[in-house]
Length: 508
Image (cartoon, rainbow, N blue to C red; front, side, top):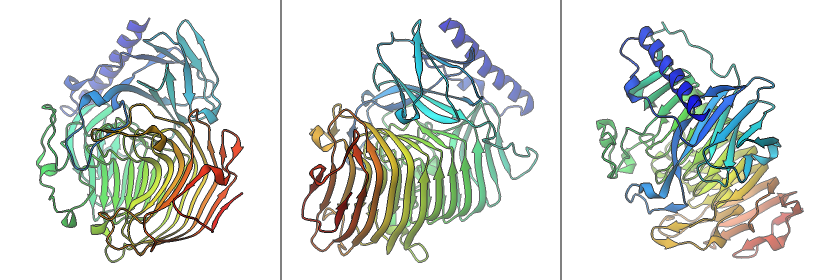
């Protein structure tokens, strides 16, 4: 049965390529067709779904920036699949391994499953993104259950539409202009990236995959011989002051506004995955990030940007997940205040670093009105919720509300060649005030009005809250912890690690 399902999946995908070749001669490349995952068979109401592969982190091991590229023995192959939601559909997952245990995350979704003949069966009650862990978290299966109306089909005859139909496309850098749309259709795998500079009213959408695996990582040597060296990447100046951090992103925008990114799956970035620098008025909706295994592979980095909405998205990142930053070279007139950013209804798995974060770079006059709400952190390493104020900004009025943090990853944590004591991993709330001296040359920042409400930790390992201050000149005022729990028990001061006394810390 398993071999038959693989065969049917491959035939379905090849069929998509054949149809597209007839529609757009010469564009798709069936030669690049990837093999389906050997670890899982997935069916929906008995119909096979193609299961893709994605390289992910195996252990929480990191290297000093910029360092060398990550050795493959620190990684492993996971799997993912996507399909539309229909009420009542039965999803079945048959792994190659014999099932000893099975967990479907986020646990708070309460998805009940049965196991029979080494097959897991379950239903979902709405469109969602979930992780199926069979016999532990290694080689997990990620399922993206899309709303049917997720991506509105564009007018393919419109010259402002970059359309990629089912099949494989070597697109390279797609430099979008104002008013343009990039549409990655269901069944499409596009090798390339989307960058926009000084543009507005741009849309990137579809249900297909944008894959950056053929593009080299900026600054560094790639030891893998099969990575394509592209001039657009290698030409990026090493002078950060005259560069843009969007180079290296699967989707990156500089000095742009009124952009919507929706539906697409982003795989294997060379560095950060979605980047905005000096941008405003963005919507990032139902975007899925998978295959982030390289060092510094962040998820969504909002750099000196404002008025951003992130929702209904899935991020499995190697490094930090959703991050708001102030960068030295991006702290320019018009972008010295970072404000009005919302992230809600997202699911995150963070293999290194911090899941929902502000900082560590805070080059700005102000960072304010940032809100994370109704998010699920299914796996994490350092901290689920984090603030690192390492530079001169006044950081104030930040909100984390209704956050579920599940299991930390404590297996073999290492920085460079030095093992890390696991007791420093697995904290569910952290804030660092000021910064290490080699980072921070202007240590006059002020932090006030931090709100943590209904943050719940349900993991099996011990956890903690940490606030620490590297500099007496950094002032901290008004930190509120409300109804936060550790496995159902309300947080008290005994759960908080402090470097120095914080008289304005309020816990209820």
